[in-house]
Image 1 (cartoon, rainbow, N blue to C red):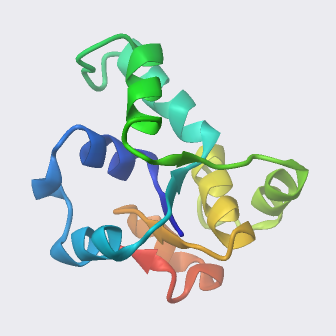
Image 2: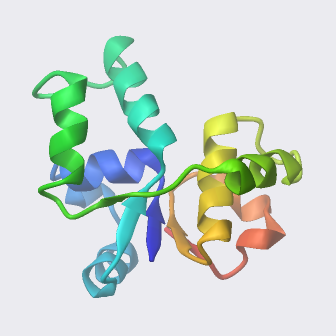
Length: 130
């Protein structure tokens, strides 16, 4: 399983493959299960609303199309992930990124992200695909 950070999900689904490394593209091609946290749906919708990114359709439609036809799984967000996100070291203050990190850890998955702050987490050693 590879958990996609929100920006990676957006780039992947939007066809912006040039923004993804060869290593990440190969990992995604070889991985049978790829997913996103529900907080990534929130982040994409909020970024579109604030005009930080442009979607070709409304946010609700984009999220639905970016999940179901693409085969990207919507991962759980349960109490264990929520608590684990709070228990992480304070390397990263963004609560959504902390939930994405906790999701990858809870699922014993790799995490695809270009966020340099993720490298500070010892818990993610060997799990981050850039």
